Length: 63
Image (cartoon, rainbow, N blue to C red; front, side):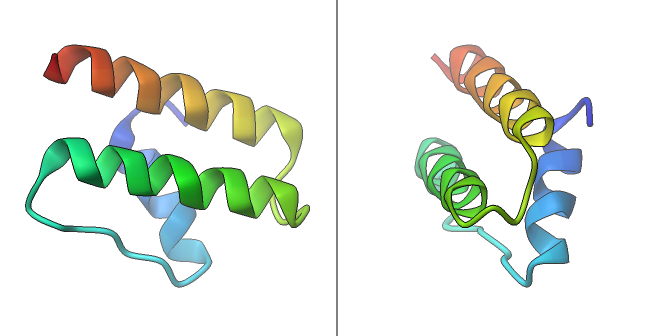
């Protein structure tokens, strides 16, 4: 996993597609969904950490 596209594909594997039209809101919702997948033990710690870093990087690029 290296890009936001990869993070979105991770969510898509679990039936979640997020698009609000607001990139900042999208990133916030994506982060919440990834955290929830991790809390429910559906993804492992490495996938979680990588996804969070990618999301934070994308958020920094927006600001």
